[in-house]
Length: 119
Image 1 (spheres, one colour):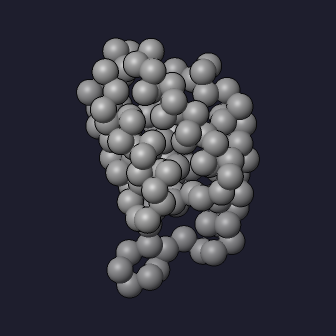
Image 2: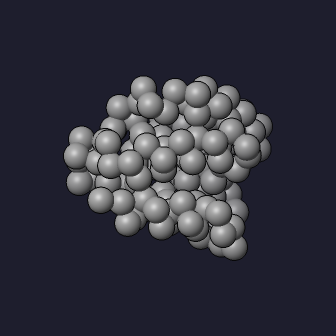
């Protein structure tokens, strides 16, 4: 969450953080996501919601990110944690899934649908 706050999206004029800062934030975020992907079942509800929001906000894409998102969606689709989320946390997850599943990636769209139809 904190990293996503460090790197807001560039405004329409294209002026954002310096490229070196953005690249550094991206590298650190990728490393953190890689570690989180190994520990999804240990993350709290707030951590899952904030992390998915940050991944979507930073528009992270790579294998570790996919593994993390898939792990989170698997945990959530099982219904095991859904009752522990605040309404804001659930809203953040739905927004993140919509952002991450937008586009032509059929597998990501299917995983997003699983989350949204979980009991």
